[in-house]
Length: 422
Image (cartoon, rainbow, N blue to C red; front, side):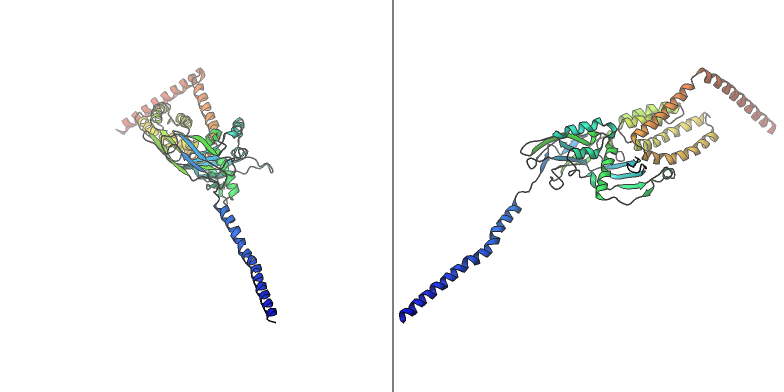
């Protein structure tokens, strides 16, 4: 009996031990799951992010200059570089193109005061042909098409975020000195599209906005150069390298400084050496006043040639004419060559034109401005040429004789009146 009890006891102990060890793997297996997965998750999160680094060869410029940009991006991916200035200027565009579906002209005026004074998007050199094709299109080239064909849609960043106002305008609105009715803000997609159009309106040429000198190596290292023009704005310039919208470098800052005689014109977004405009204006005003004008019609195209926006040129010429006209009026009045009645009458008409002109100037493009101004000069030149013909000179002699006779009789009448008063 004792043996039977001993055997049963031994079997019970063995059975209990076997049950304990049978459950242990199961108990340890359950918490082992997170232990196995956690390291995998940590490894995935701790995996080095696809970072982009960028640096420049110089952080200080004086009167512009060339910057060499180097850096590294994830291997096998295209890199793009955006460079823009801290200083901003106004850019405007009138959308008067017929709608492809309805054929109607929208006449919507787009304007921003946040356009960078300098902007450059550097694309990989393999997209050089895209820029060449855009240049062949002439004035019809499109910023959005270049960006799309160069695969840069995701990296087009800074200008896409600028605040753009839009107005439903009309000729009548410009006559009464208004831009028209202000419309509701645009959504992000539409704002981005219009920013591209304003970018072209501001900088005009393909080469002023894009560059394709970005060389990318197999390991992801890259190199490019950008030229900050001598007439660019002073202040900070930001350089950012991008692979896409989210993978990009931290901005690198380059400081540009200027010194006299270079002067920055904020509303034009340009730096100008004032010595040459001063000398040219002095010479132009001399001949302008000689012809009874302020010299603005000669100064105007010269300032446009300096690269200043036509809207700024038209406004800037006005005070210069004021100075020359004031001195001209004083000297002509001393020698009694002014007919005040006629001058005041013409001046009232000029008030109307001076009120309408600035708004119309804001609505037209530089090419339209050149076209209109060119025709005005041609008509004036033709008129002055006609005044040198023998027929006109003969007629003018008769007019001068009549004028002299009238003046003589007026003086005689005045003398008789004085004698009679005595």
